[in-house]
Length: 139
Ligand code: IDP
Ligand code: MG
Image 1 (cartoon, rainbow, N blue to C red):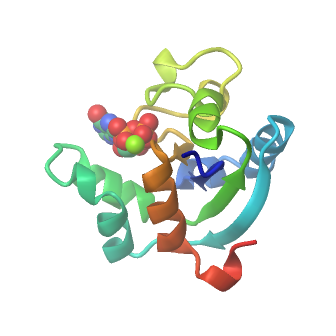
Image 2: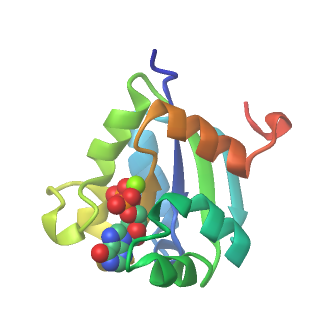
């Protein structure tokens, strides 16, 4: 059953380029509501753990280095069909392949520095949300 929630991070490049406000506005305009949000910076251990599924991939080291390179904004979002609709809103992993009007098409710099994270399943949305937020921080 769908939980109607997903988890996102605005990645260091999005904050560095000053686009966080515009990206959050796009998320709200698409009908998502914010159930948790924080401005933080991942430690190396946190980034390694968060992206553990990619540990064997050649880009893992680069990914961890990038995700710890500056602050991020983490959030839990709610909307009907949240996981799939948010993946549609952010667009393909590589901004070169992302559809017009998607967040990555508009704001991502490259395949590595692609502005936003979006959970890929309801199960991962719950795991990732709980990785970043305690129960008292989720509304
Ligand atoms: P997703 O974020 O669209 O779900 P994943 O395949 O789960 O994409 O990859 C996680 C993140 O790892 C991507 O968002 C991107 O930042 C980075 N990444 C993915 N593939 C590459 C690559 O080939 N080179 C460098 N970084 C990559
Ligand atoms: Mg992914």
